[in-house]
Image (cartoon, rainbow, N blue to C red; front, side):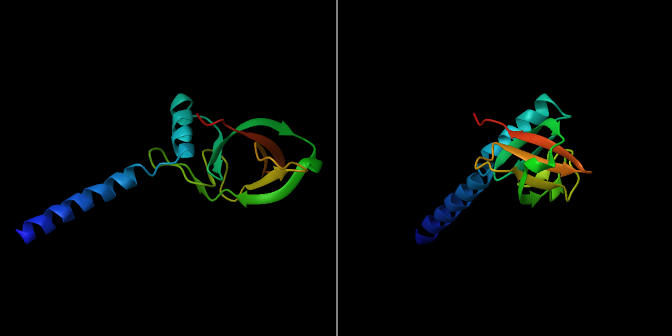
Length: 124
């Protein structure tokens, strides 16, 4: 009887672990996937669990603030998103905060000596 009880507990605990992995997709990952499904050519990246989408080019280098990071990986269809992953920016592209801005609702990307504003998509 003890062996049957132990066997049932092992089976139940194994099922619970599988559910946790399936539920581990972040809101940003879901939002990025929805955006790609709506527009497969969308130019976006993930930073700090937020999705940023391309808006405008700028010419004023004086707007560059602190370096926040670099693109580390490129998106591959059906592979899922992770922080510092981009759909179109090359690996190594630098991401900056806007100068004198505390918010990170907009970020600047420096790509091939071009400065481009990316704006965070609202969640929900």
